[in-house]
Image 1 (cartoon, rainbow, N blue to C red):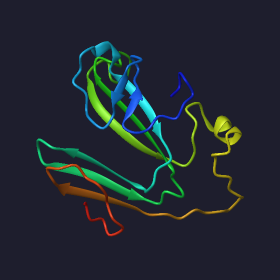
Image 2 (image 1 turned 90 degrees about the vertical axis):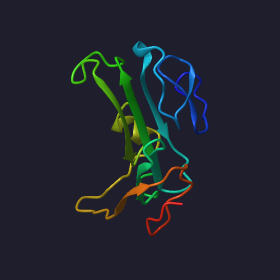
Image 3 (image 1 turned 60 degrees about the vertical axis):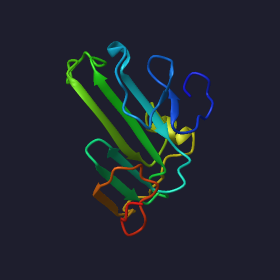
Image 4 (image 1 turned 180 degrees about the horizontal axis):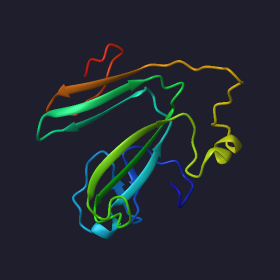
Length: 150
């Protein structure tokens, strides 16, 4: 929690408005001026996520190597929350970005907090990702190593 410095457990985090919000659900916009939120998810047990539209019974999942990408930055904007470019108050979106380090303010802070990956010249890191589109009308509990949505 950026305000208190405490670690908060999924799915409730302090949103842009200062209120705790359930980030596992897309919001109903009550106050469109306060509809921008961002959180960093860490301490992941496994490297996967799933986003499901229960009304349409479809979803998208991603599986990855959690050792290389131990963090997910989740940000979302709904309605008029971002009045500046490029959105100009006309967007409803959510992004889940895999990250190798933790810092909301850049690489220097990631180095200071010892989460930055230090690489030698010519060093390579190889990894793979698995993207899964699925049909499901219940919450997802897991995406296994073969890409099965459970």
